Length: 336
Image (cartoon, rainbow, N blue to C red; front, side, top):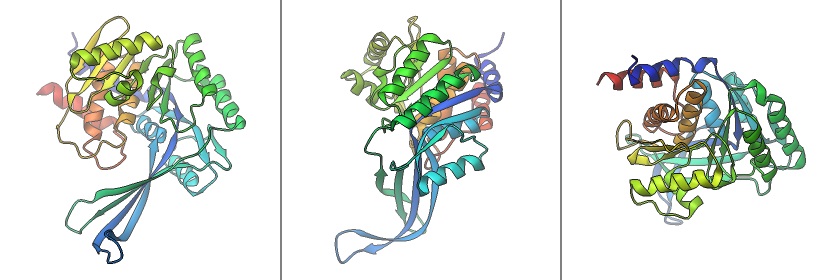
């Protein structure tokens, strides 16, 4: 009989045969690295000397990156602007051999960009001192919506799962959500959703993956203990008709609940003190989704997602988890 560790490792080895579509808000994560010189005489602010910068796949694009580094085939679906950051995102994906055929370029709509300025001396770790967000002020136009809906309709039968990474920045419009809910009701495809503010608007999907503050906000409930998190999970399933919910709880680990009533509290993997939680939710839903396509139960998928989350928060900035890292973490933990 297989041990839990052997079972989880076998699931990871099947990732490479899977095909995942990721729909959501494609974000350019821009990091500007500076050296802190002194305090300005003009105002009580730091003077920062520019050193360099880098652009990283963020938001739904980070989920795409994680699916790719975990070994599966991935197709991003979303919208970018006809601008410098949009060109950067396309170039980064093409460099990583990620197809970009299903990305719509929309005029007059800027590519969503999060610029983080990091500062420090030559002998200290650089810390984030400010973040500047550039976001669209309006929903996708009719052309963009039709493009995305057409992509979903024509390709849903060719993939193993549809992952929704909804940062509530415009891509998942009411019409597109309606199409996702329709697909959830008429296909047996795995559909997972990570939505910052509108998780309850997704009906009948396979699973939701909110964090504690997101589920508290969605339900207008407070979580003070394990009993509260279970009650919130049950209420969310009742309201959405989803098959399961995975709630990430920071240092408290994870909670997974299925509509059958089965549930698990999963303790955190790794260290309590983390380096950076940026993009950890993208890593969690990517691993969780892939595991489900490989035949994992929701509990098994949540445990693999817990390993991946524990790995990625020890990395600086937006970063993916690699299949080898995940496999070795499971292997190492199962021997201890």
